Amino acid sequence: MAWEWGDGAGLVGGAAGVVGAVIAWASLLKAREANTIAKQGVESSRKANEIADAAKNLSDRANELSREANQKSGTSNQLAHEANRIAIDANQLAQQANDLFHQQERRGVEVHDVDWDGEWVRPGVYRLRNEGTHTAYDVSATVTVDHEQKRVTSPEVVGGDHLTLDFPEARLQHRVERRRREEAERRRSLYSSPSVIPEFHTIKERVYWKTELGTPQEHVPDSQPMAGLGDFD
Image (cartoon, one colour):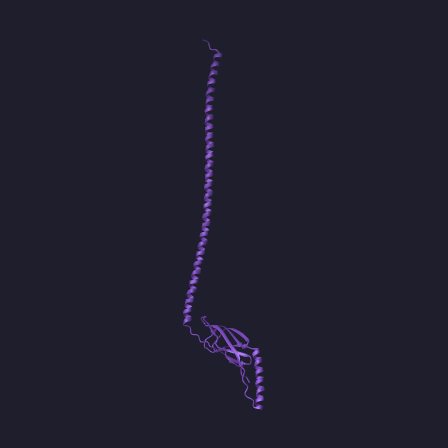
């Protein structure tokens, strides 16, 4: 049987068809595989996005918790400082109370010798003298002669020292009374008139002071003595 070129071409064509079919089938498989992979990639991408969102939410929550912790820490520090300040104040108050207690104990046994005596030393000049042996502190003295009142203060008046108050109206009244007495004496020597009755005035003393330990004291006589304005003739 003789070989003919036509028959060879047919065989080649058939083989080519078979190869083409195989290639087409393989391509289809690859396409399906690629499509599956692509779908898996989309799913993986979606899951990755979900995981990323969840991680972001967790990160945001962690930051929020961190801020709350910082705020609570700041509040705790403030409360601790406030508690410490209150404790310091309480200790100071306790120390003050203790000091006052001991001060009261010392005041209870304190010896204090201060006594005030007032007198006219010249017309219109009144002197309050500390007749005691101790010092009077933060002294405030007020003397009222009839309706004329004068006040004097001093940080301290030692024993034997004095305060001086000036009374202009009393000085003028003293001059008037002296002239009356002189006139009355002249009349008495001429006509044997009775003795001149002396004039008296109300003198009120009030003295407030403290002892060395700070104990308040006062000199406020119950009665208001009636006395003259001084005899300086």
